[in-house]
Length: 338
Image 1 (tube, helix red, strand yellow):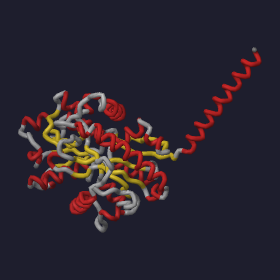
Image 2 (spheres, one colour; image 1 turned 120 degrees about the vertical axis):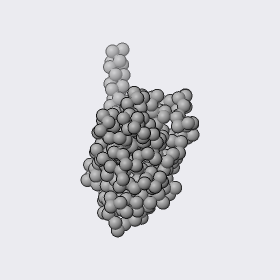
Image 3 (tube, helix red, strand yellow; image 1 turned 90 degrees about the vertical axis):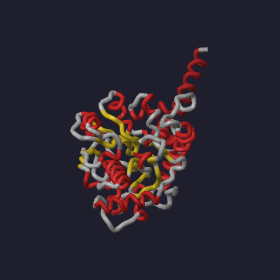
Image 4 (tube, rainbow, N blue to C red; image 1 turned 180 degrees about the vertical axis):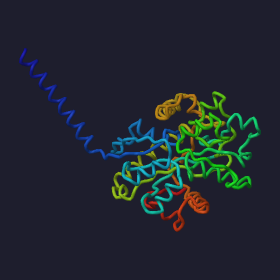
Protein backbone atom coordinates (compact mmCIF):
# COMPACT_ATOMS: atom_id res chain seq x y z
CA UNK A 1 0.00 0.00 0.00
CA UNK A 2 2.79 2.41 0.97
CA UNK A 3 4.70 1.69 -2.25
CA UNK A 4 1.56 2.37 -4.29
CA UNK A 5 0.98 5.66 -2.44
CA UNK A 6 4.57 6.77 -3.01
CA UNK A 7 4.35 5.87 -6.68
CA UNK A 8 1.17 7.92 -7.00
CA UNK A 9 2.83 10.92 -5.38
CA UNK A 10 5.78 10.62 -7.74
CA UNK A 11 3.44 10.48 -10.74
CA UNK A 12 1.58 13.60 -9.55
CA UNK A 13 4.82 15.48 -8.98
CA UNK A 14 6.08 14.44 -12.41
CA UNK A 15 2.81 15.55 -14.05
CA UNK A 16 3.05 18.89 -12.23
CA UNK A 17 6.59 19.40 -13.43
CA UNK A 18 5.55 18.61 -16.99
CA UNK A 19 2.68 21.09 -16.75
CA UNK A 20 5.00 23.78 -15.42
CA UNK A 21 7.49 23.08 -18.18
CA UNK A 22 4.71 23.34 -20.76
CA UNK A 23 3.56 26.68 -19.36
CA UNK A 24 7.13 27.98 -19.36
CA UNK A 25 7.63 26.83 -22.94
CA UNK A 26 4.44 28.64 -23.95
CA UNK A 27 5.58 31.79 -22.17
CA UNK A 28 8.93 31.59 -23.95
CA UNK A 29 7.10 31.42 -27.28
CA UNK A 30 5.24 34.70 -26.66
CA UNK A 31 6.58 37.76 -28.46
CA UNK A 32 7.47 40.46 -25.96
CA UNK A 33 6.37 44.06 -26.49
CA UNK A 34 6.64 47.25 -24.44
CA UNK A 35 3.71 49.59 -25.05
CA UNK A 36 3.65 53.23 -23.93
CA UNK A 37 0.29 54.73 -22.89
CA UNK A 38 -1.32 57.35 -20.66
CA UNK A 39 -3.71 56.43 -17.86
CA UNK A 40 -6.66 57.83 -19.81
CA UNK A 41 -9.89 56.31 -21.10
CA UNK A 42 -8.69 57.12 -24.60
CA UNK A 43 -6.51 54.01 -24.18
CA UNK A 44 -9.44 51.83 -23.09
CA UNK A 45 -8.91 49.09 -25.71
CA UNK A 46 -5.29 48.73 -24.57
CA UNK A 47 -6.42 48.12 -21.01
CA UNK A 48 -9.14 45.70 -22.09
CA UNK A 49 -6.75 43.72 -24.30
CA UNK A 50 -4.25 43.49 -21.45
CA UNK A 51 -6.69 42.65 -18.66
CA UNK A 52 -8.79 40.14 -20.60
CA UNK A 53 -5.78 38.36 -22.05
CA UNK A 54 -6.33 39.34 -25.69
CA UNK A 55 -2.65 40.23 -26.14
CA UNK A 56 -1.64 36.86 -24.71
CA UNK A 57 -4.22 35.06 -26.86
CA UNK A 58 -2.59 36.70 -29.88
CA UNK A 59 0.82 35.39 -28.80
CA UNK A 60 2.13 38.51 -27.05
CA UNK A 61 3.62 39.25 -23.66
CA UNK A 62 2.85 42.97 -23.32
CA UNK A 63 4.43 45.22 -20.72
CA UNK A 64 2.52 48.50 -20.35
CA UNK A 65 4.64 51.58 -19.64
CA UNK A 66 2.78 54.61 -18.29
CA UNK A 67 3.64 58.24 -19.04
CA UNK A 68 2.31 61.63 -17.89
CA UNK A 69 2.22 63.35 -21.31
CA UNK A 70 1.89 62.27 -24.94
CA UNK A 71 5.08 63.64 -26.47
CA UNK A 72 7.49 61.61 -24.27
CA UNK A 73 5.81 58.46 -25.57
CA UNK A 74 6.84 59.37 -29.12
CA UNK A 75 10.40 60.03 -27.97
CA UNK A 76 10.55 56.73 -26.09
CA UNK A 77 9.31 54.86 -29.17
CA UNK A 78 11.98 56.44 -31.33
CA UNK A 79 14.75 55.67 -28.83
CA UNK A 80 13.69 52.03 -28.52
CA UNK A 81 12.72 52.28 -24.86
CA UNK A 82 9.28 51.04 -25.92
CA UNK A 83 8.16 49.14 -29.02
CA UNK A 84 4.79 50.84 -29.58
CA UNK A 85 3.26 54.14 -28.58
CA UNK A 86 -0.48 54.61 -28.22
CA UNK A 87 -1.40 58.21 -27.49
CA UNK A 88 -2.41 61.56 -28.97
CA UNK A 89 -0.82 63.19 -31.98
CA UNK A 90 1.60 65.98 -31.07
CA UNK A 91 3.94 68.29 -32.95
CA UNK A 92 6.84 66.33 -31.51
CA UNK A 93 5.43 63.07 -32.83
CA UNK A 94 4.98 64.57 -36.30
CA UNK A 95 8.51 65.98 -36.34
CA UNK A 96 9.94 62.58 -35.44
CA UNK A 97 7.73 60.85 -38.00
CA UNK A 98 8.72 63.39 -40.65
CA UNK A 99 12.35 62.38 -40.13
CA UNK A 100 11.42 58.73 -40.65
CA UNK A 101 11.91 57.63 -37.04
CA UNK A 102 8.22 56.83 -36.43
CA UNK A 103 5.37 55.38 -38.47
CA UNK A 104 1.65 55.46 -37.69
CA UNK A 105 0.07 52.00 -37.96
CA UNK A 106 -3.48 52.54 -36.69
CA UNK A 107 -6.06 54.88 -35.20
CA UNK A 108 -7.20 55.17 -31.61
CA UNK A 109 -9.27 57.90 -29.92
CA UNK A 110 -11.40 60.51 -31.71
CA UNK A 111 -12.95 63.75 -30.58
CA UNK A 112 -16.57 63.21 -31.56
CA UNK A 113 -19.80 64.95 -30.59
CA UNK A 114 -21.53 63.21 -27.70
CA UNK A 115 -18.40 61.44 -26.42
CA UNK A 116 -16.43 63.15 -23.69
CA UNK A 117 -12.66 63.24 -23.88
CA UNK A 118 -11.00 66.69 -23.76
CA UNK A 119 -12.84 69.56 -22.14
CA UNK A 120 -12.36 73.30 -21.69
CA UNK A 121 -12.13 74.28 -18.02
CA UNK A 122 -12.02 77.70 -16.35
CA UNK A 123 -10.68 78.71 -12.96
CA UNK A 124 -13.38 79.90 -10.58
CA UNK A 125 -11.86 83.39 -10.62
CA UNK A 126 -11.90 83.63 -14.41
CA UNK A 127 -15.42 82.20 -14.56
CA UNK A 128 -16.67 84.83 -12.11
CA UNK A 129 -15.01 87.49 -14.30
CA UNK A 130 -16.99 86.41 -17.37
CA UNK A 131 -15.30 83.34 -18.88
CA UNK A 132 -18.47 81.32 -19.47
CA UNK A 133 -17.95 79.42 -22.75
CA UNK A 134 -15.22 78.19 -25.12
CA UNK A 135 -15.71 81.20 -27.42
CA UNK A 136 -14.67 83.45 -24.50
CA UNK A 137 -11.13 82.00 -24.36
CA UNK A 138 -9.70 84.72 -26.64
CA UNK A 139 -7.21 86.85 -24.73
CA UNK A 140 -6.97 84.48 -21.77
CA UNK A 141 -4.05 82.63 -20.14
CA UNK A 142 -4.57 78.99 -21.04
CA UNK A 143 -2.55 76.02 -19.80
CA UNK A 144 -1.68 73.04 -22.01
CA UNK A 145 0.80 70.24 -21.51
CA UNK A 146 3.21 71.10 -24.32
CA UNK A 147 3.54 73.30 -27.39
CA UNK A 148 2.01 71.45 -30.31
CA UNK A 149 0.15 68.98 -28.07
CA UNK A 150 -3.36 67.72 -28.78
CA UNK A 151 -4.64 70.38 -26.38
CA UNK A 152 -2.78 73.12 -28.26
CA UNK A 153 -4.15 71.91 -31.60
CA UNK A 154 -7.68 71.76 -30.16
CA UNK A 155 -7.27 75.36 -29.04
CA UNK A 156 -6.15 76.33 -32.53
CA UNK A 157 -9.21 74.71 -34.08
CA UNK A 158 -11.40 76.63 -31.65
CA UNK A 159 -9.71 79.91 -32.60
CA UNK A 160 -10.33 79.17 -36.28
CA UNK A 161 -13.97 78.34 -35.58
CA UNK A 162 -14.73 81.54 -33.68
CA UNK A 163 -12.52 83.87 -35.69
CA UNK A 164 -9.95 84.91 -33.14
CA UNK A 165 -6.18 84.58 -33.47
CA UNK A 166 -4.26 81.91 -31.62
CA UNK A 167 -1.60 84.57 -31.08
CA UNK A 168 -4.14 86.53 -29.00
CA UNK A 169 -4.07 83.73 -26.39
CA UNK A 170 -1.27 83.36 -23.89
CA UNK A 171 -0.62 79.63 -24.16
CA UNK A 172 1.32 78.26 -21.19
CA UNK A 173 2.97 74.85 -21.78
CA UNK A 174 3.33 73.25 -18.33
CA UNK A 175 4.73 69.87 -19.49
CA UNK A 176 2.39 67.46 -17.69
CA UNK A 177 -1.26 66.87 -16.84
CA UNK A 178 -0.53 67.13 -13.13
CA UNK A 179 1.10 70.54 -13.58
CA UNK A 180 -1.83 71.81 -15.64
CA UNK A 181 -4.41 70.69 -13.07
CA UNK A 182 -2.38 72.29 -10.26
CA UNK A 183 -2.18 75.60 -12.12
CA UNK A 184 -5.91 75.57 -12.83
CA UNK A 185 -6.77 74.78 -9.23
CA UNK A 186 -4.35 77.43 -7.98
CA UNK A 187 -5.81 80.01 -10.40
CA UNK A 188 -2.43 80.92 -11.86
CA UNK A 189 -4.08 80.42 -15.27
CA UNK A 190 -7.51 81.42 -16.51
CA UNK A 191 -8.32 78.15 -18.20
CA UNK A 192 -6.96 74.84 -19.43
CA UNK A 193 -7.71 72.04 -21.84
CA UNK A 194 -7.70 68.69 -20.05
CA UNK A 195 -9.04 65.17 -20.45
CA UNK A 196 -12.11 64.90 -18.25
CA UNK A 197 -10.44 62.09 -16.29
CA UNK A 198 -7.81 64.57 -15.08
CA UNK A 199 -10.33 67.34 -14.36
CA UNK A 200 -13.29 65.40 -12.95
CA UNK A 201 -12.34 65.73 -9.29
CA UNK A 202 -11.76 69.47 -9.70
CA UNK A 203 -15.23 69.83 -11.24
CA UNK A 204 -16.92 67.65 -8.62
CA UNK A 205 -15.22 69.61 -5.82
CA UNK A 206 -16.30 72.90 -7.46
CA UNK A 207 -12.67 74.01 -7.80
CA UNK A 208 -13.06 74.75 -11.55
CA UNK A 209 -15.88 75.26 -14.04
CA UNK A 210 -16.40 73.12 -17.11
CA UNK A 211 -17.12 75.20 -20.24
CA UNK A 212 -17.64 72.65 -23.01
CA UNK A 213 -16.22 69.72 -24.96
CA UNK A 214 -13.75 69.66 -27.82
CA UNK A 215 -15.72 66.88 -29.50
CA UNK A 216 -18.83 69.04 -29.64
CA UNK A 217 -16.91 72.11 -30.88
CA UNK A 218 -14.26 70.71 -33.24
CA UNK A 219 -14.23 66.91 -33.84
CA UNK A 220 -10.91 65.42 -34.93
CA UNK A 221 -8.68 62.31 -34.84
CA UNK A 222 -6.81 62.55 -31.54
CA UNK A 223 -4.90 59.33 -31.02
CA UNK A 224 -3.01 56.70 -32.92
CA UNK A 225 -0.86 53.60 -32.66
CA UNK A 226 2.71 54.05 -33.86
CA UNK A 227 6.04 52.26 -33.94
CA UNK A 228 9.64 52.73 -35.01
CA UNK A 229 10.90 51.37 -38.35
CA UNK A 230 12.92 48.79 -36.38
CA UNK A 231 9.77 47.44 -34.71
CA UNK A 232 8.00 47.35 -38.08
CA UNK A 233 10.56 44.86 -39.40
CA UNK A 234 8.99 42.33 -37.01
CA UNK A 235 5.78 41.85 -38.96
CA UNK A 236 4.35 39.07 -36.72
CA UNK A 237 4.74 41.34 -33.68
CA UNK A 238 2.94 44.25 -35.35
CA UNK A 239 0.20 42.08 -36.82
CA UNK A 240 -0.50 40.36 -33.50
CA UNK A 241 -0.66 43.65 -31.60
CA UNK A 242 -3.09 45.25 -34.05
CA UNK A 243 -5.28 42.12 -34.09
CA UNK A 244 -5.53 42.08 -30.29
CA UNK A 245 -6.30 45.80 -30.21
CA UNK A 246 -9.01 45.46 -32.84
CA UNK A 247 -10.63 42.68 -30.82
CA UNK A 248 -10.73 44.98 -27.80
CA UNK A 249 -11.81 48.01 -29.86
CA UNK A 250 -14.78 46.12 -31.24
CA UNK A 251 -15.83 44.99 -27.77
CA UNK A 252 -15.41 48.48 -26.27
CA UNK A 253 -17.41 50.01 -29.13
CA UNK A 254 -20.23 47.47 -29.12
CA UNK A 255 -20.62 47.21 -25.34
CA UNK A 256 -19.75 50.68 -24.05
CA UNK A 257 -19.99 53.26 -26.82
CA UNK A 258 -23.28 52.06 -28.28
CA UNK A 259 -24.81 52.42 -24.82
CA UNK A 260 -23.61 56.01 -24.23
CA UNK A 261 -26.43 58.53 -23.81
CA UNK A 262 -26.03 62.20 -22.85
CA UNK A 263 -22.29 61.66 -22.65
CA UNK A 264 -22.45 58.81 -20.12
CA UNK A 265 -22.39 55.02 -20.25
CA UNK A 266 -24.84 53.12 -18.06
CA UNK A 267 -23.59 50.70 -15.42
CA UNK A 268 -25.23 47.35 -16.00
CA UNK A 269 -24.37 43.67 -16.31
CA UNK A 270 -22.95 44.16 -19.81
CA UNK A 271 -20.95 47.35 -19.30
CA UNK A 272 -19.70 46.92 -15.74
CA UNK A 273 -16.87 44.42 -16.44
CA UNK A 274 -15.29 46.69 -19.07
CA UNK A 275 -15.89 49.87 -17.07
CA UNK A 276 -14.18 48.25 -14.08
CA UNK A 277 -11.14 47.43 -16.22
CA UNK A 278 -10.92 51.05 -17.40
CA UNK A 279 -11.32 52.26 -13.81
CA UNK A 280 -8.53 49.94 -12.69
CA UNK A 281 -5.98 51.23 -15.20
CA UNK A 282 -6.96 54.90 -15.01
CA UNK A 283 -7.11 54.93 -11.20
CA UNK A 284 -10.60 56.42 -11.31
CA UNK A 285 -13.81 55.53 -9.47
CA UNK A 286 -16.31 53.66 -11.63
CA UNK A 287 -18.77 56.56 -11.30
CA UNK A 288 -16.28 58.86 -13.03
CA UNK A 289 -15.38 56.44 -15.81
CA UNK A 290 -18.95 56.36 -17.11
CA UNK A 291 -18.74 60.02 -18.15
CA UNK A 292 -15.32 59.60 -19.70
CA UNK A 293 -15.81 57.24 -22.65
CA UNK A 294 -13.73 58.47 -25.57
CA UNK A 295 -14.92 57.46 -29.04
CA UNK A 296 -12.80 54.80 -30.75
CA UNK A 297 -13.48 53.25 -34.13
CA UNK A 298 -14.44 49.56 -33.80
CA UNK A 299 -11.86 48.59 -36.44
CA UNK A 300 -9.10 50.94 -35.37
CA UNK A 301 -9.42 52.99 -38.54
CA UNK A 302 -7.53 56.26 -38.96
CA UNK A 303 -9.03 59.49 -40.34
CA UNK A 304 -6.13 60.09 -42.72
CA UNK A 305 -7.66 63.26 -44.19
CA UNK A 306 -7.85 64.83 -40.75
CA UNK A 307 -4.29 63.77 -39.92
CA UNK A 308 -3.16 65.51 -43.12
CA UNK A 309 -4.99 68.65 -41.97
CA UNK A 310 -3.28 68.46 -38.59
CA UNK A 311 0.15 68.32 -40.18
CA UNK A 312 -0.61 71.26 -42.47
CA UNK A 313 -1.98 73.35 -39.59
CA UNK A 314 0.97 72.62 -37.33
CA UNK A 315 3.40 73.37 -40.15
CA UNK A 316 1.64 76.70 -40.79
CA UNK A 317 2.06 77.58 -37.10
CA UNK A 318 5.75 76.71 -37.20
CA UNK A 319 5.34 73.84 -34.74
CA UNK A 320 6.20 71.11 -37.28
CA UNK A 321 8.97 71.06 -39.87
CA UNK A 322 7.90 71.55 -43.47
CA UNK A 323 8.77 69.31 -46.38
CA UNK A 324 6.60 66.27 -45.68
CA UNK A 325 2.94 65.30 -45.74
CA UNK A 326 0.75 62.60 -44.32
CA UNK A 327 2.00 59.84 -46.65
CA UNK A 328 5.49 60.13 -45.17
CA UNK A 329 4.33 59.15 -41.68
CA UNK A 330 2.02 56.23 -42.46
CA UNK A 331 2.86 52.53 -42.61
CA UNK A 332 0.34 51.84 -45.34
CA UNK A 333 0.66 48.07 -44.97
CA UNK A 334 -1.10 48.35 -41.61
CA UNK A 335 -3.24 51.48 -41.56
CA UNK A 336 -6.98 51.07 -42.04
CA UNK A 337 -8.45 54.24 -43.50
CA UNK A 338 -11.59 55.77 -42.06
